[in-house]
Amino acid sequence: MAVLRGSVELVLPICERPASKSTTLAKLLRWRSQSRHKASSISTALSELDGGPDSSELLTELEWLLDDAVESCVIHRPEKRKIQGWRHLKSALELEECGRGDRDDLDQERNDTLAGHGEIFLRASLEELEQGWKERIDRRRPFQYVTGSSHWRDLVLGVQEGVLIPRPETEQLIDLAAAAMDGNSELARGVWVDLGTGSGAIAIGMARLLDGRGSVIAVDASEVAIAVAEANARRYKLQDAVTLVKGSWLTPLRDEAGKLSGIVSNPPYIPSRNLGRLQAEVGKHEPMCALDGGDDGIDHLAEICQGACWALKSGGFLALETDGGEQAQTVAKILSDKPFEDIKVVKDFAEMSRFVTAFHT
Ligand SMILES: C[S@@+](CC[C@H](N)C(=O)[O-])C[C@H]1O[C@@H](n2cnc3c(N)ncnc32)[C@H](O)[C@@H]1O
Image 1 (tube, rainbow, N blue to C red):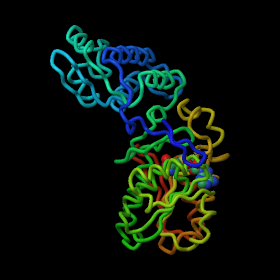
Image 2: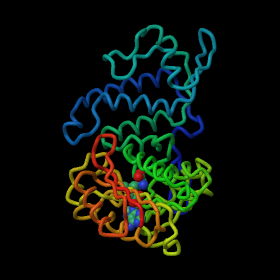
Image 3: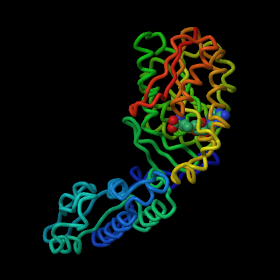
């Protein structure tokens, strides 16, 4: 299900589609059982190959897919009743939780009776779910592209091919910006920029943090990213708080020179030589323009540091995500040769030196 925005076909996340498809409960349970079998047969093969998902992760994803797709079930006999959502249906059927044992349900006979009289209302047809699950496992298509959505902080964002799936570690950039504003409430009333917005995750997180006090400009060079980010801003009724701009880093913001309160960015930072070694979900499916950071992974980070010198106002805040470790130290060194102070390398939740923050002098 897609909507055309400019030349970009925007995919509607499964969880937001109307429940316009139906099938029998028996067919759905048969498909779930086959899909669980397919997931279980993977065991640890993909995680050993390139750090991909193992069976238990895939089984969890399968339940999430059903959460998104199943709107309700009407059981016609013995008495008519409606069960809302996959979680409730699952507990009504006493289906086994994913990942435990290899039996699919606890009371086969009772479930066979219910399944024979159950009608399921779906947000995606059973054929689409079958196709999606096949692509997930056989083609290693990322789960978030299969469902068309990604959970990030407290947001559910639309994502699709051509746009990076926002990562959990990036969530911390919003906390770093919040901490900078805590010490200086003036910053919150200014203009903030998210460079390389992708799905719009950081821009939307920032707009919610600013809560009407300041505004956000979200820049990306990719037309798909701009269209997806715009749709996500609309999803959260933040279209007036987030201005989308297509262009390269700070180049389209020359008019803002010396005026910005903050720049937050998670630019492409993977060294080009490492791109061939990525997990298949990332390397085969996510956009290279969101990953490739040039020879040492530092090209875009260095360009943003350079631009931040003229774009930020005095006291303005810069927060950058890096590949971690040595690269974070290199970025801190780049900033130390420029008009920045209070330069910090900040660890992520996995204790990796990941972010670099600084204030313009
Ligand atoms: C690592 S992704 C980050 C996406 C998003 N901010 C996030 O954290 O999920 C980097 C983004 O930078 C964008 N990008 C790459 N080169 C760019 C450039 N020269 N100017 C602006 N954006 C660029 C890519 O299209 C991609 O959306």
